[in-house]
Image 1 (tube, rainbow, N blue to C red):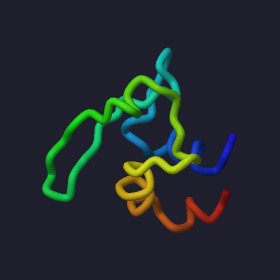
Image 2: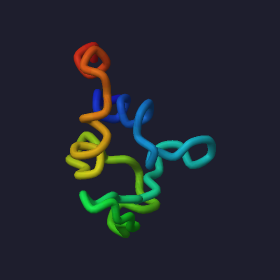
Image 3: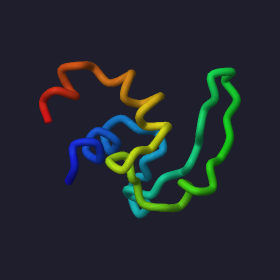
Image 4: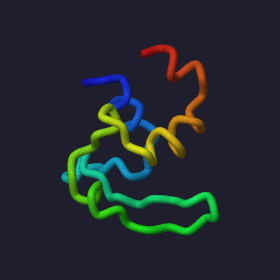
Amino acid sequence: MAKETILAKQYCANFGRGKESGVCSGVMIARSGQLWIHEDYQGKNCFAEKGCDYFKSIVMPGIPDDKTKKR
């Protein structure tokens, strides 16, 4: 499993759990605070390692540095 996917599993609110494990819910957040569903991501397997904007812009900055450097 790629480093980004492991971190997404641990920290991303969009990363599905249980029977939906690894399936993205597609919720996006704009800088203004507006939420919307990104249909290109929703219902598809997590692709944080391939360049998910939400993961890169929202999730990664919130992960403690020691967690991102361990992997």
